[in-house]
Image (tube, rainbow, N blue to C red; front, side, top):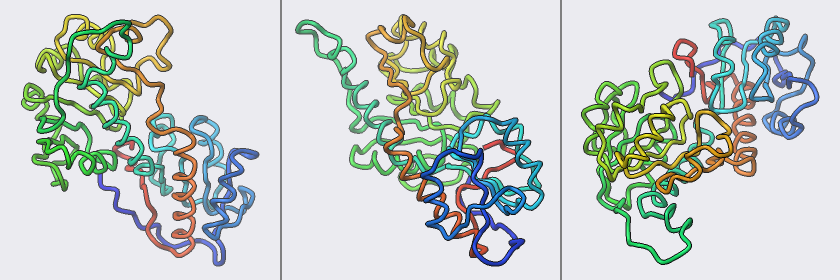
Length: 317
């Protein structure tokens, strides 16, 4: 969906925005972010907005929202809101961290793509001089699954490589830097030409298991998959089989299913697999970025302006 800010409607109070930081006693750095945006931390019964400070606790969030009759807006902490889908409603404006982490995540996609396509996974594990391997990202055919902020940042990072880039997204709206934009209905058509498939999707019923045995069988035996979306976008057992049989060149994963990836799992030792422990966006990167988003949205809320990162309640992200 578009990241265009949505209008908030009329505020219920004059003066500084009245923000409840919940659950109580968490995330003191968010207090600074709220106050920097001109907000005032208040109790729930005084609040017109909630900044939710933990990526878990849907039942607690639902109870909190239900008990706060004056609340109009709820800010969720991270880009992924899967735990809270059941809580979303049309009575409140919901925003999240979508787009906040696009730059570091896109950088990590590029890092893993180059590492995989250039054979670094094999070379790093080697204990002796080996055979040359690797394919170019320069001039490659790249397929990006997802058309949000991460894809926008990745398209910019790919420009110097002269890659031919296809983006598959919910709606086939043009994107700067993409040679072609389609929908996921086109995936079986484009996968056979891909040298690199990068996943940066929201997790929905439609995108769960989007790469499975059928799709791996369509791909080049040299193609690499890089996943920084959600682990459940890939059927893990099918991926392991494809890697063991050499159906694809390899996979670089920052997210897995299950997660954390258990000790002893084949993906840890397969020579054509690279796994990083969900570090596309580390706390050192995330906290300043999220802090700025909260500050900006609190300031916008106070001015009665559109907020950034609106959640599409019907789409669930």
